[in-house]
Structure formats: structure tokens, C-alpha cells
Length: 80
Image 1 (tube, rainbow, N blue to C red):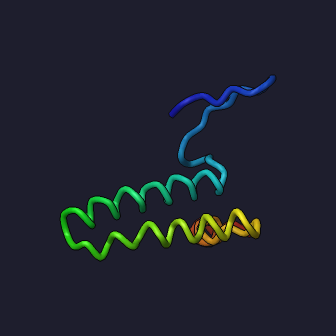
Image 2: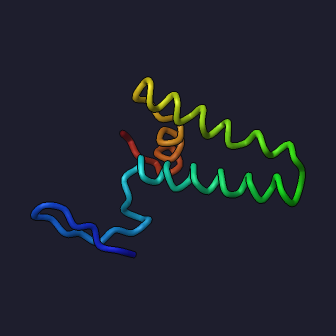
């Protein structure tokens, strides 16, 4: 996908080997974009969906526990 370059380290980054927190960012962004299109083309009630994402980000920022990462790790079968 692309190459991540940091001090003294270069590695290839794909969706398969992204850390869980970055996968959560991708999912959160996807939900926000999808809710925009759903709200515009289906029904205005989908305007509230990004608030769910914002609430999860607020919980993650204030407590250090990210519910999206928890569910993504459960889907992948991680034992972390």
C-alpha cells in the first residue's frame, strides 16, 4: 500500500498489518462518510450516526479505552 519511514526503520504498511488503533480510525472515518451519504440519500435520521463515533472517540481520549479497538480485536481473534 505505502511505505512507512521512521528514524532507522522502513516497513511496508497494508490494511492487513495496521495496528488496531489505526484500523479503528479507518472504520470511524468510514462510518462518518457512510452516514453523510445515508443522511443525504436515504433519511435525515442518519445525521445522528457520527455522534456515535464522536462518543467513542471521546471515551477513548478520556479513559484510554477504545471500544472500536476492542471490537476489532474480537473480530480478528486477537488475545490482547
